[in-house]
Image (tube, rainbow, N blue to C red):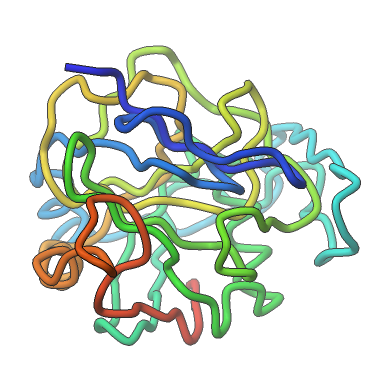
Length: 239
């Protein structure tokens, strides 16, 4: 089975490469899912209280593509777990963000959410073969957009991506995540290389909502493209 890739082009770079890979700003292909169990635990496990001043340094680097939102703080501002709600046309998606595992990524996501960056943006890509993801976070809806800066990778090389996983897309190169993220909605063991920062999970109910979108397929009947049932994020709130 081919390695999956989920790419996001940085500026005008191409997004995803081969089916089975995921990249962040310009996504041509999404990641595979593994297990739905994390989603279940995300729904039932109470979050710890986020705390300020974790001491983790985050190198958010402007990428020269645009004047975007303000850069997140250069020191990670949250730790523990953070609850987030993505209000979408497919339902409210309840997420638990893991700031201990990915403090810089979660810090960026929280900063963008608080600035309204995700408001009124589409989930522009759905894949229904090889890897099974719904990709969102591009305000342009083209797979080429981002926040104007990049995020350092937070990976160990042992990542897996079970169903219910939230992870960052990238351009296929190290440290090129931005605002684009993907939701893994089906288990496909070993389909994605451990190069995508996993930063949270969605609840079991939210996973069912995403699967309902996937059941309707891709616009035009393909296996990789805009979802046939459009999904728009109206707002993201964190607490």
